[in-house]
Image (cartoon, rainbow, N blue to C red):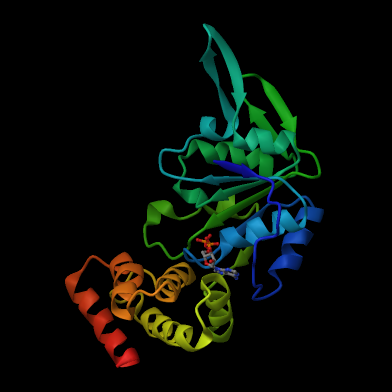
Length: 264
Ligand code: ADP
């Protein structure tokens, strides 16, 4: 969990009306779900909005061991005494902050039970262990992200949960916008960044066949950073794109062939 008051506003290049929609969700006290593939800018978007709105942000990267107690809090032993310690969600509610649950479907099932009363008109966080029922103040906002691309049925979000959120679909930006982002994030000049964007277009058209998912904007910025730092293109693409995308030797070879056609 990280909590930060971001002093400067992190760079985020909007690709649609997402900033207005975020603000509208906040004003209406509605939770927001960001749907989209990994590395397409969801986290950056939330960090940008929180900083712009001057709100503290609690980010929780959900994983399959994350339980309701990890979000709400638990009794801890301190100097022979038990003491209640708020978890990040409880703190966010108490402090009128934004709580961002990244990849919420990864979390254990008991998390859903906690989210339901918080994401409907009750806006209530039930702290079973202490008997407390916290009504979220107007300034509290719950944001969650979810990757609909994963094929695993167990990791799908249940309609009863998703229908409590306003939702925005994210995707990889259009090529000209992605170029702008990669240049800005990496410092690589547009001339050398452009082939990376073309490569991404080709790789994304392969995804679904051999690749579970296309290359993310995040990986493109990694590759661009390495190239800007002086690494040779082949090596940069190998460590930043090909190896992270696949473990399969045949798939890696077809990716190298693609690289060769684009850079050849
Ligand atoms: P996600 O949360 O969707 O997995 P991130 O928000 O962590 O992805 O994005 C990964 C990286 O991609 C960011 O650190 C940033 O460098 C870059 N990025 C992607 N989309 C944008 C955007 N619209 N504006 C600025 N940077 C972006």
